[in-house]
Amino acid sequence: MGSTDTRPKRLVVLVSGTGSNLQAILDACADTSLHAEVVAVVSNRADVFALQRADAAGVPAVHIGVHPDEERSDYDARLADVVAGFDPDLVVLAGWMRILTMSFLGWFPDRVVNLHPALPGELPGTGAIEQAWDEAVTGRRTTTGVMVHLVPDERVDGGPVLGTATVDIDVEAGFEQFVTLVHATEHRLLVDTLATLCSTDPTRNDRTEVSA
Ligand code: GRF
Image (cartoon, rainbow, N blue to C red; front, side, top):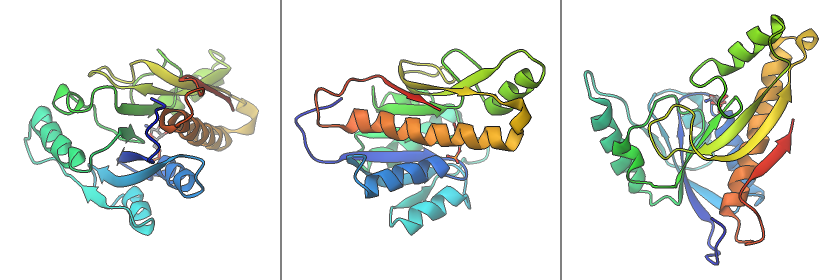
């Protein structure tokens, strides 16, 4: 991205839970380290803390629940309609826990960005943090990581990589400390990667690497 268009980029953030990554984005927009504004937060689940974070930041908080027996593509078409209404430059999947079909992705080519707590090609899907830990405890790995990537199609946690960060696993320090380190690394990588994508500085390159 990077362009002569100097207005702050419009972000619609899709969430399904606590929203700590959403909060990192909101804080970075507020302190202007991220040249963007969150114009809406959309959740497939009601009553999640992420929607309260949006409310507290004065950002429209939208719940779009799945109707009983609704086809995934029909839900995604409804979702795309609402998201398009906010005219986003980027759609950020920050803890969004549903696979999106082309009924959604087709509306936002090269504009959907996902965060995943594993390195490219590793531990796709849910439970990646727990799996990495279990493998470390049994001596099968010593590091893991996090990544930010584009979502061009229906692959799970796959697509052109925009940023990565490696996280060392210290089994002695315990699981809670490991989870805290992974989330802190996610917050930093997501904001840094978005800052590059939203930057008006053409010299800023497109691939972000941060260390844990
Ligand atoms: C993050 O670890 C994200 O990578 C994963 O779900 C978690 C969401 O955390 N997909 P939060 O809701 O942003 O705190």
